[in-house]
Length: 224
Image 1 (spheres, one colour):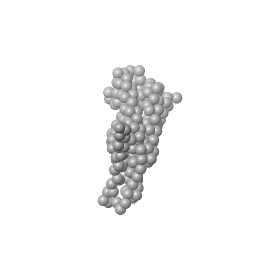
Image 2: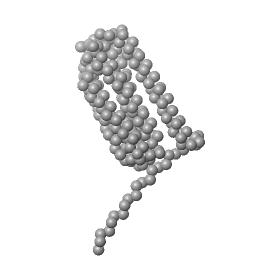
Image 3: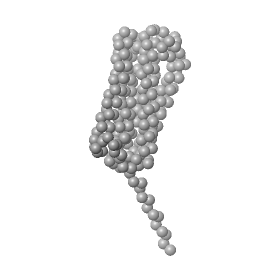
Image 4: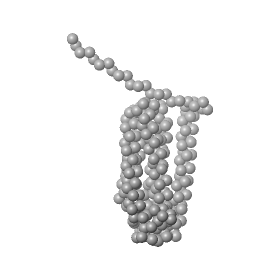
């Protein structure tokens, strides 16, 4: 008897986009979602912009101390983390493209790759923090690094912990968002015609990466 052919498995249908009651149609809902995200991102830029301004003001006062403190930071780790985040941004962009092509499973795999890189970023940052703690480099009144006892170095490392710690919180929040999006992609909640959530999550992750691009030279490279 001829062998029976296996019955092809029908792909799971894409979950339709949900229209909230306050919107007339999906186009207006999508426009409002993107506009709201850009407003949120602008508020984040204002937050970090204030910290960058504070850094610039203190550097103008303690220029030599800041340069000595920057030279002490591990530029290899800082540069490696920059490459890690830039690569993760590429994977997130590829996930958005895959969703628009109605390939949510592929998009989910890209998001998992970005999550792995984000975790690697936090792991390297933890290694760097641990090295500083062993040397007595703590923020504020806890600072007791004998190699750089100057007041300016203490100010620099306090700003270092403030900016990188706040950024790490944003990275952690971004990883939660990416994980939720990856889960949705594997369950075919997102696809062509229903990609708004993936796009908005991608925008947030790109902001996290852009902020680090500014922190990288400020905290690791500007020692000359």
